[in-house]
Amino acid sequence: MPKSSSSLPIEIKISTVVAISTILHSADPIAIDAALKQMTGGVSDFFEDEFAVIDVAGIADDAAHIDWEALVALLRKYRLNAVAVRGAPAALHDVIRAHDLFLDDGTSGLSTSAGREREMPAAPAAPAEAAAPTPAPSAAPAPAPAPVHAMIVDTPVRAGQRIYARGTDLIVTAVVNNGAELIADGSIHVYAPLHGRALAGASGNAGARIFALQLQPELVSIAGVYRTFDEGFPAEVARQPAQIRLVGDRIDISSLGSATRN
Image 1 (spheres, rainbow, N blue to C red):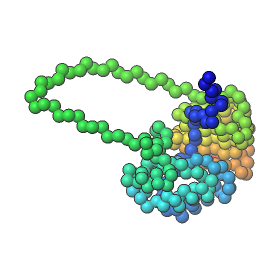
Image 2: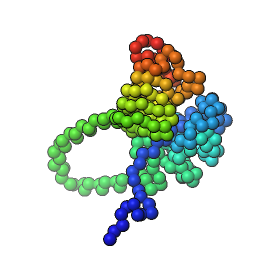
Image 3: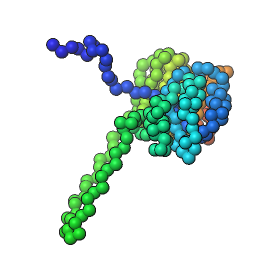
Image 4: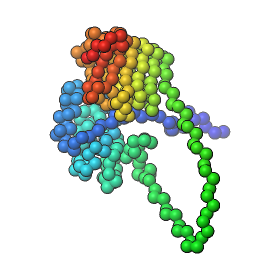
């Protein structure tokens, strides 16, 4: 009689893993260290052992000068666990893999050495006197992709719980408690008090926003730009309907009932 799955020594299930994009604009470890120190404000658990994808697309010409071992150790110092590299030139792929880092193509998740692209063989040349082929009938247009609906959560989000809306907006209709974390590639809408952490535009969408009926968060982020509230949330917009968006490189907070800006 076959054993039930619960009796097996291991189970494999599909799971979503969230990683923070660490986008490099310099290969200088001293500059990176100083920027991380300023970003975290010296808070030792700012990142809480998050996974990190190192994006080097912006410094592709200087990527060959990166000391990968030192960079991984530097990120670990700030409790960021580097697991992959995005945007690296092909010449560096073997070096990156040698440091136990995956290659992330930015669209289909992490790729390992088994996921390399394969080169298509060239089509054979047609005979010199071959008759012209009969034109193929026009292909019917591909159907439009089905719309991606927002993820909706109707229950309270507890401390230590993380919810990620991949490729879409996140809508929460119950309280988000301190210590909870909301992440969405699109915008985040909370029709209840929002405490904890809220990270919108997680895949780089700078136009994403965070909306809530009552705002009292620990941390917010839009497209990787963070703001913490160690000294308290601005009193003029606290505990009332408000939105958070990115204006340039600054987090902007405004009441939905007035033109107040912070």
